Length: 559
Image (cartoon, rainbow, N blue to C red; front, side, top):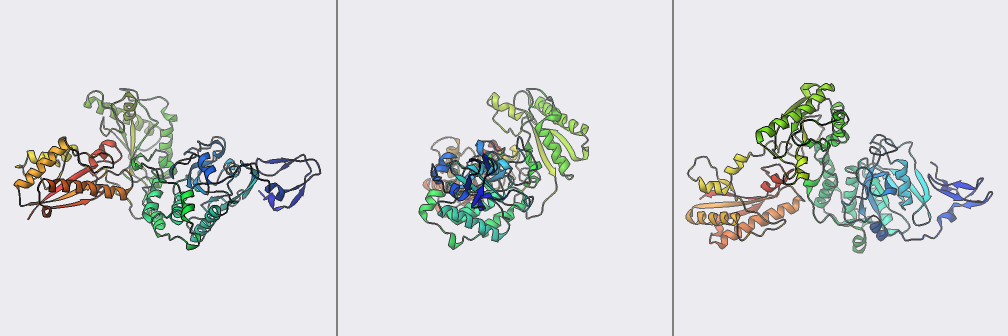
């Protein structure tokens, strides 16, 4: 589209003059319309940071104005996963192409037209498409009736987030929006609203909100909605760390207070959601060994089949993933809730997995690429206490056994779940087991203080209970065995920000150290250290696993 506003005056030949995609000005025949005058109309409301903060109910950096399918704010439906970066200044997200109800197209595209128009009407001065692909013939600008009662011109740019010159230009645009009240917000977007937009957002937060490299990387990870485990993404983290703010774009503390949203009060990284569609849209984000729940596959109590399997959304996605990646090999795992006998549940879960397996075979997928197994009530994904949550445990999980591996240095230990200890192995690691079996050979020297539970985010040792009793027994053991020294190691689960987990684990280890000192154990016999979420002994994806990983380990040593 041509930018009509570059024309100072234009003779209208019709009663209605078209100005933008969905904007019109009514005129008398023969009337001259001066667009500069139209732009000069006094606004009815002030589009400042408070206006946008209240209009979109922006609470924190992770608050979504539109969700993964573009819903949440009707006039911004063409956006996806839209979130604030700076109140009233900069916003991030994706383009709602893949899920669009009426204008569905491939995910790898710029904003749909209703997204461009919606942002224009909301008073945005510009949008930025962060990729090189599929932009050459796209609309470069729109003019529309703005929410403040004026005409608004909205420009659409393409900048490459990998290009440092382009990154600087986007920071300059952001600085102009902060410091010039006549310049509206900008929308920086990629395809999904996760990775590329997350990178430029993290850089903006370092530049304008004083974020440290550590905080900016944590923000990037949290904003990927769980699609952050591919080794290729480590390069983005390094780019965020290596970015140094430009002195010419620094802003005052008062502007920071106005525009910088907080991080969420409670951050639980285990709540980040992975579905089978991720294996289609962003397969590089799913590591080998990962288990994906098919949330739309549901079984009735005692049932091992369900109707309309060929049209089930998750089965359709599974087939697309198999078609897209010829190297994809999977295990189909069946599960049950904990009602009834374990043996019967294992048989039912096996039949559930086989039902899906048989359908895939009948659909033409090779048996060389699939196996199936029944796990019964093992590894509940939800609580079995309530009927409403038990049905979620009657499920199918897809384990990624093999896939096309993208280049990059390994980011995470993808085999961590396979290496998790069995229940019997964990029991033998308990301090109470050691006290009850001190004469048994092969016990080792590292033990978990079992039943020692801390309140959330707390390092206060409980004043009673089994954990307290085990601590008292430990103090008695050390008093009796004066030649033994001990390391105290604190661990957390993987929930939350790593830096805070590290600090909390050390505070808890020190609390045990202080407790033993108070019981008369000499300080030169004890050392303590926090390890954060390192060395998990159970899967962090499940509550039962996180409960186990939040622990204090003691290591006995002799002089």
